[in-house]
Image (tube, rainbow over all chains, first blue to last red; front, side, top):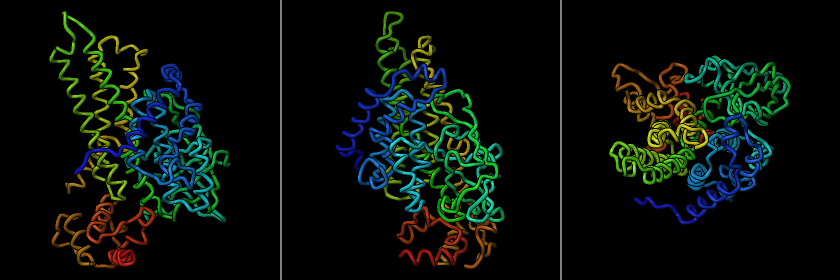
Length: 383
Length: 78
């Protein structure tokens, strides 16, 4: 067993950190308050090569080969150095739930048509799965794709879609054969401007306010046959595949955020003095810091194991569920501890500490709630 | 191979239900004998047991509808 990272991976993480720290717009507090997504930051990320980490160079990727371990470490470094958690969430959603399925399931034409533009930052992707009546029970979706001459007619509504209001490329899941239940679901690529696709306005939310989410409607929306992703009925596989990657990688950046949060907390509790001593000398404060460290390291081990399994092409359903549950709940608990340790100062918006807490809450809801992760774990244990 | 798969499905997905009868031709998906989580477990078992990798694009109803279909798929990958 070897827990060390190759030097070139560590060096690349450092490059990502330097890029994020030096280049990305620091006005995140203002964007958070106004709920603004920075397209400029998105394009800078693409120019650096962030979006291209999930696909090989042949399709616009950053490196010759797709290296999931390097990508994991890079996105962890991104979260460590970039305080815009919404931007990190958007990047990961775009990379792992849209670009990657197009690479894995798409035809050569689809790969060449969409991936270079997505990696270059010209196109933003949205993964349209969740519906008003199909959240945790995702396979009960109502959106239909009726076969018609030359393609399909899409009819239905998706909601809580990351980048839904502004996406250029939407990967939508719909029923093509209701009689087959979850085995009768297919995936389609819908381009912005397609007649019958309605991209609703951005919806305001509690956290992750710098990445837009919203509803999508499909009204007699014609999708040509060549825009079906994978075989008819491949939706189950695409959803399972996407969710596993989603759970593995979407939180890598939040691990970096947790590391930053811990460092800032240690710095604060050693400097801040009350009753003639640093507040970190009080056991109640020190215990919270120790718990933050424990959460960080247990989350890290689970992330690296899941990433290693995926890099080996292996199934990681249990590991992905454990990771998603542990990391998202840890970020939430540690964000609250960071505020408790920071006291009234941390409650102020200008410090950014309270923003982490608001951003962390979404993590226990999206890509499968914590309750669902526990169900998956229990079921895989045979309960 | 089909007996191994049937035994796995009975033992792991149906708690060793002695009264459960599964034939290689039974529709596992339409009948509800195997649901989505069970399918992922079967794929993990196949990968470990038969030393193959099941790429995501091969996880289709054609390859996993019946035990017979799984056997054919595994044979084609070995």
